[in-house]
Image (cartoon, rainbow over all chains, first blue to last red):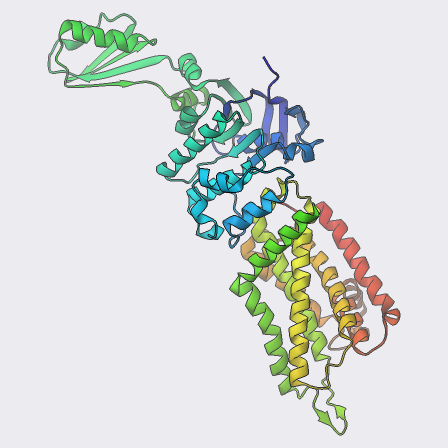
Length: 305
Length: 247
């Protein structure tokens, strides 16, 4: 296995008496989208900015592309691209001026026309920053972060405050970036975003890393329970389903029956049995736990608390 | 990186010029006030062969106002940029911190020169004979003064909590300095503690330098003021590197 693109070990950072990041260890590999997830104030941005070299860690070591972010900051800045949380540009700077300025800062840059077109900003070249929508602003920040064709992209709360449509568009763009072989390190407090976008996630809470893994792994490990909820007018439906392998409990309220069980095959077993028994079903849905449930279980509180 | 500096300076200049309140009004206001006040005080009108004695030097007052406006504008911009994360975003590029801030200083100095140019043009139009100063020398004196006061502006910019309060706070800091600058009465008439304060302020040395150049004495006679301005600059830059906040 090639060495990780980003390696963080025992990172610690305090602001005065407040511990922002405590003993965080991470490894991020080439070509993956890695998400640091947690509520606001959990230490996501601090961790990311230490890795970017914008902040000095109190403890621990960080290596990005084999470089020390503080010592080799100048060299690193040519190989990474960053987007900050809730960032702004000069209100009256035009899109092309920002692109032009950023282009002048790096020895080698991509074709900016192609970049703008890919990000859907080609019609906005002459628009002032203040006139752009939230989604357009974020796409411009992605453009600025990618102008020098960096190997690693840092995206901090990229879709916060965007409407669902703009959010989906941005997710598509980030996946495209991964497909070109780039490594993406992002933070989010949106569990849906982490689940849909990230290859692996790390859950951080109160500055400490709680868990790392793929979203599916984490769900499997911490919330293996599956639920099937169906409605049937037959009175004995619940009893007939009690024999499903791996079923743990059946709760019936009127015509609505909730079956709980574990394992990937559980839902299949239930469907098979319903078919075999010829039970008349009016409604049927499955409830698979999400990263949000994992988060709740591991931290004892919701991500928006 | 010089390329980056000029690009950034040019972008900042363009962005600044697109700001109607931030550009046109500060440019026009001193000129209009100068002309109006000059007329009502009969500045420069010949009476019995010599110019009327206005109790203080009107062009120097307005040159100082131009310098102070540049500083207020810089502090406001810095606080807005800091609040919006613009400074932080620029710092995450290969631009050096000094380059980022120098671009702003350069824009402000250029703005100062343009403002002074307009002031002198208007003065020569409305008060012929009263504005025959050595312009290059006076411009240099104003620029040195502005640079020194700007360095104090960076210290103030570090103290300003949010952009909303930037303008009132910096104005409250700077404009009272005009009263102590020696423009309206000699510093020696102040009580001695205030004299010490006055000599620690860049505005006092700025007025002394510009007054000297205006009166036609050379730079050699102004070395005290020049040293004062450079000392303030050095001290303030030193403090700024310690206390300046990027976010």
